[in-house]
Every structure is written in structure tokens, then in C-alpha cells.
Length: 168
Image (cartoon, rainbow, N blue to C red):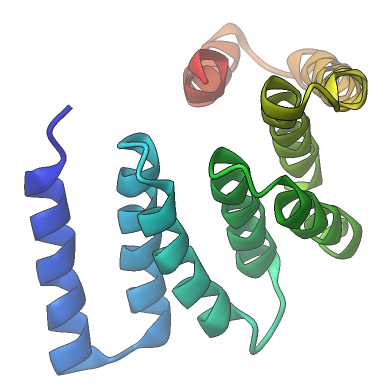
């Protein structure tokens, strides 16, 4: 895919924020979009630059956004074969960010990091399977509980919302 037009648009938005607004959270929003584009384009080092910038913004108050950013950094590091750093980051995000709803998603990311590590080093697949199993069991339980109270239209909207994960 050609991401050049999107990159140019986000870079222009970043320049506008820096010139006229300089709100760090707006900058973080644009940085996150740029990081996502670079990640999709398999330019993990470039994605990491924007995520690191965001982490510096968020570190002033560790909140859900900071832990999500750290988990995204961990995926980039794993894609760059920096597995020890990636696992340290995701473990910290899981342990310290556990009070947020995204903890299960971080567990899935840990499984992905371990699976990537296994492809390169030949180690980590069993632990990855444990992470994925725990993730899917929790998702199953959540879906069962939610579906009991949903109408058919609400169930359809639910599946449409999580479709992006299913294709991930």
C-alpha cells in the first residue's frame, strides 16, 4: 500500500499543532497515527520514534494511554528482534497497567511477542500459547456474559466493532 499521502497529511497536521496549538495531547494523537502508519508499512524503527515521543508526553502521569503506548513500543521492538526489551516493556505494561481494561489486549500482545521470538530464537512458543489461551478464555467469557443481555442488533454491532481484531 502507498502510505505517502497519509504520511504527508499527518506531518502537515503535526506542523500545525506545533505552530498554532502546541497541545501535547493533540501531538500525541497525531504521533499515534503516524506510528500506526509506519507499523503497517513495516517500518518499525520509524514507528518506535513516534511512540517514544508519546511515552515522554504520557510519562508525566502514567495512565491507560501510556501503558498502551508502551505495549505498542514492545511490539515494534519485537519486530526489530529486540525481544528482551520488548518483553520487559510488555511485562511492565501488564503488571503496572493491570487496573485498566486493556490488560487482556496486552496479554495478547505478549503472546505475539513470544511467538515472534520463537520464530527467530526457537524459544517462547509454549509461553505464547499460554498467553493466547488465557486471552481467548477471557474473551469467550466476556462475550458469553455480554451476549446474554444484548439484542440481535447489539450483537451485530459488537461483531462489527471487533472485526479488526479478528482479521489481525
